[in-house]
Image 1 (cartoon, one colour):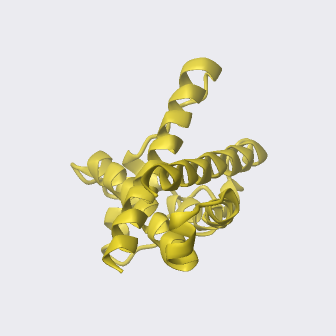
Image 2 (image 1 turned 45 degrees about the vertical axis):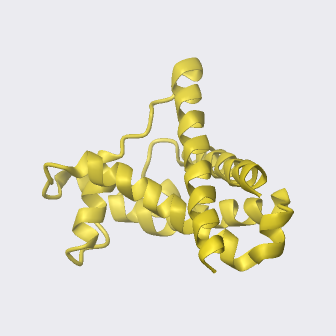
Length: 159
């Protein structure tokens, strides 16, 4: 079980790194704004105080370390998803990884963003309150596919 745990941690980190590199590519070559993890950090801080949903996270009380909290939370959630993948598909998958299980986990995790994080930040269910929700949704699906690819590649490397 200890082996599954550490592999799951590595897989989650690998997937998150892939997602972050993808965000850098989008920003540098396609003019997409890079992710700002400070609002996510503020949300996680408020989540710890019992407040899940906000009308506008920017109007919520700030925390001096919210950017750091956001980055740590980003990687902690990625690790959690890597652990879920490793535990659900188990030792056989870890020895011989295939893309489909990673893709399933990657796409299912979009739901956490659409139905928990985004409404929690005050941008609506599945970014419905943003100026271009379909663009946000498409970018979410692509980013989580890249995350899945990163988990799969990491699993291949550490097998």
